[in-house]
Image (cartoon, rainbow, N blue to C red; front, top):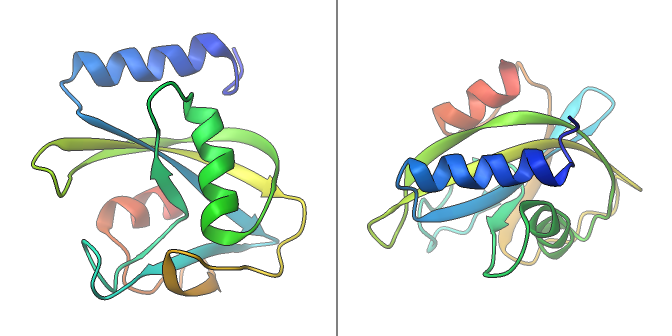
Amino acid sequence: MTVTSAEFLTRLVSDAQRDGITGLVAAALVTDVDRILLVRRRPEDFMGGMWEIPSGKVEEGESILEALYRETAEETGLTIDSVHSYAGHFDYPNSRGGTTRQFTFAVTVEKAEPVVLTEHDAHQWALPGELPEVSEAVRELITG
């Protein structure tokens, strides 16, 4: 079963529902050679100043994969060329008092530049061993 199959994606959602998760987020682990794209949350945002991988809410009626493509394009201006693996998930408290599950997929993009930010105040391409301030969950996803 591939990570882009309907069965796999349905199982991710049903597992999250079973676990009482109230929000779903799709995230892209975008790599360029051996570097990973990180974006920084604006200071006034929830968890402001934290570096993260491009991600966003799965909207009503949208699949995780559709959200992955849409959010990556919206937040970075980059177009996903292919989704090649599922990197895993983690749960975190959201700003609405519930719990969000972030599903992360390793992707390749058509072109790594230019990165055009719409929701963050900075971006960088970082080596896995030289990450800036990211959450422990993101660090674990990146470094294994």
